[in-house]
Image (cartoon, rainbow, N blue to C red; front, side, top):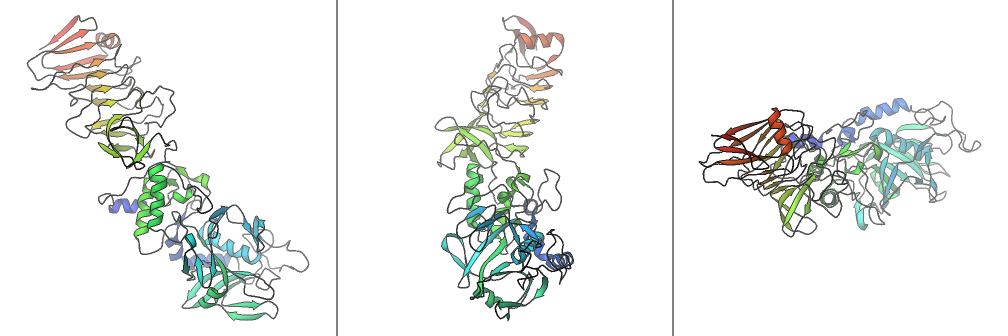
Length: 556
């Protein structure tokens, strides 16, 4: 997957904050029901959303008939038809159980047996949660002594919220449980929706405040916060993307998990007996339906907010676009949004941006491997010893790339032999580039590249075979100024231009010294020059030779 650029003071501009905390980038067509919904959006429209559910499931109707999105006017008869009329909703796609930190594709009945759909009171409460929060992902918090069991054995005082699916086991004689869905809270008073409160008919009731506490005598009690704290067995709430520790909010611990997995290693959180396994959806913190650098900005913003907010995990994992390079393994390391590889004790080469969506990227002069803490100077671009068919992270998606002064080599096939090469602009971020070598075929597939400027690269001495694309039209060669050395770059074995050059090319040479500069054209480039496809724009004293050292032309 792809690395997220670490936040800096300057980076947290209002524009970035808006981008990261709003709907985000769109990578594929998706309906509004496909997209994650923000918790604050649900809560700010809670009354209207509840009213829509009331119209869909009218008060006094019966949740049966075989369609979970409709009701009938006929009650179930649980004493004679063995629940065949009851509606069912599929169990949550994943339930995160705070006791076990497991995610499962099924729920369990009160005896611990797995089943794949829910009906009656529990099914209806889950259905309301799925509709209102647009999700199939919920976190289950068990409640004991008025406290919710949280991460790593910690507890927190249970404060009921609208949207809570609360499971009650209050009847000590019949051991009958019942699920309610909280729709409104006024002070300590709880209002809820329920289905099958009589255990017999699957009737839907809204705006309830009283609950059957004893199904033998049908004794009713008023439900308030204190009653829920005493009698609730568990509560289910929607899972917020980025809440890796499942404590119901995004905090600094979640930011650290994001950094240690996605940012530092390019991987997702692995599941174990003590850890909830993470999916692509869990990393879509800004709700954009894609996993990219904006999500790391977003999780830091939510963690620093005084209010609980975030995007509710809503769609199945395969609907998410992972914009990261999944090939980032032990041979590479990540730093500030880039993939790098150590080439010796002090040096590293730049491989690619971690995120495939980074169309502009500036390579820093120094990078640090977060796994070892070692700092390296970036001296190369591209992986060493590549061939056209090498399977590696491709440096193909960047349209504009900045290179630091420290780079001495652009390696062979640096911009991979690939048909989707996007490079259009290469530039140096300093005024004194140390570039000495451009490898064979380094830019050969950069077919959107029309111009390259190496005029400031006064140490450039070698340009490899067919290093440039057939679309190149302008090539600035190193300028020679007073007091500088007079580089004479070797230009390939047969030439630096493509064998099927499609455009006319102008090579620009400038010599500001009093000495003659020597240029040697090899066979293919020489043929282009003689045919007029290659032009030399020469300023200052220069002599042109072929590979046999035959003088072809003198410029004064």
